[in-house]
Image (cartoon, rainbow over all chains, first blue to last red):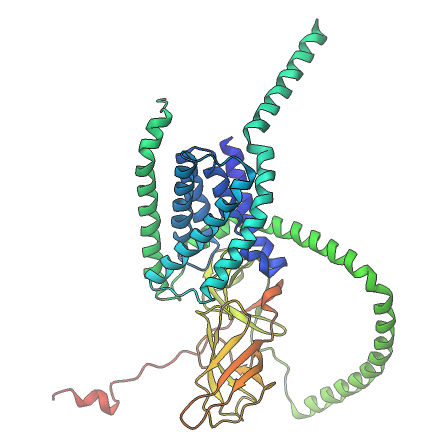
Length: 176
Length: 301
C-alpha cells in the first residue's frame, strides 16, 4: 500500500511539472494537492501529514519559489482535512467538492502569505491566480478522486480480496 | 513492533504536525536567506531535479508523443488547403532562393576580397525543456543539460527568436532556467538599433501575462509601438545585440517622467521545447581603485 501511495505521489509531481509544458493554463491544476487531499480524507492523520509534507517538498524541488513553502502549506491542509474528517462524514462524492475547493483556496493563500512574510514577492494578481487555481483544481480533483478510488478505496480493496479468494477457491476445486 | 491505537495516533498527530511545520518553516527561512542573492546555487533543489531527471524525461517524451499525435489528427482537416498554399509558396520560394544564392556567392567573393573571416561569437549547448515550474506564481523551466555539458550559473538561454532567460541552478545533468517573464528576471536593453539609439532601460518580467515591462527609458527618447528591443550587454549576464522582443504598449513620458513600455518577448516562452545555452562569460569589470579623488578625500596623511 505504501509503495502504491509513493508511486501516486511521484506520478502527481511529475505530471504537475510536465503538463503545463503542453498547455500553459494546466499550471493552475494542483495535482499534488489533489493527492494530498485524497489521502487526508482517509482518516489516517499521520499518513496524511507525511504525504502532505513529502508531496509539498517534492513540488518545491522543481519550483522557483522557496524550498519548504509547499511542504508547509500541504502539511497544514492535510492536517486540517484529516482533523475535519474525524468529526464530519465526508465520504459522499458531492461533499468532497467543497473540500477540494477549500483546500485549493487555503493552499494558495498560505503559500502567498509565506512568501510575503519572508520577503519574496510572487507577482501575478493574487485573487485572480487563487480563483483560477480553485476552479481548475476543484474540477480536475473531482474526477481524479474517482480515478484514485479505483486503486485506493475500501471497496476496491475488498474487490481485490474477493477476486483473490475466488481464484484460490477455483484452484482448490481443480486440484480435487 | 509497537502497534498504536487510533486514539494514540490522534493524540500524537499535533506533535507530528508541529514537527513537520517547524521543519518546513526552517527550510523556508534558509531558502529565503539564500535567495537574497540569486547568483548562489540552489543546492537541494538542483540535486532533487537531477535525480528526477530520467523519469521526467520519460514522462515528457510520452507527453510529447501523445500531444504530437493529437495535433497530427487535428491538422488532417486542414491538410488539403494547406497543401495548395504550400505549393504556391514553394514556387515563390524557389525564385527567392535563386536570388539568395546569387547574393550569397557575391557576399562570399566580397568577403574574400576584404579578407574577413566568418566566426561565431559564442559556443552554444542545445538543450530540451523537460519540465516547467509546478507553481502558478513562478516562471522557471528545467532543461536536460548541466555542468557536464559546460553549463554554468547565470549563463544566458536563448532560442532562434530571442532570449529566454538565465541559468539559476546547475546539476551535472540538468539546469534550472529563470524565464525573462518571471518578476525576478531582468535584462539591460535598448529600444531600436544598438549604438544608434539612446532609449536605454531595463526589461523586467511581469509574471503570468507573458509581457515584459521596460523601465527607466527617458521620456525624451523617441519610441514607437512595434519598435524592437535588443540587449545592451551591460547587465553582465546577456551579451549585447540579442533580440528581446517588440514594443506592444506605450504610454509616452515627458522630460521628467520615463516612458511606460510593455514589451512582448520574441521567444515563445509559453511553448518552449528546444533552447540553447550560450557558454558566455561576460567581460570582467574592473573594480574602482583608491586613486579616485573621492576615495582619497577621507584619508589622513
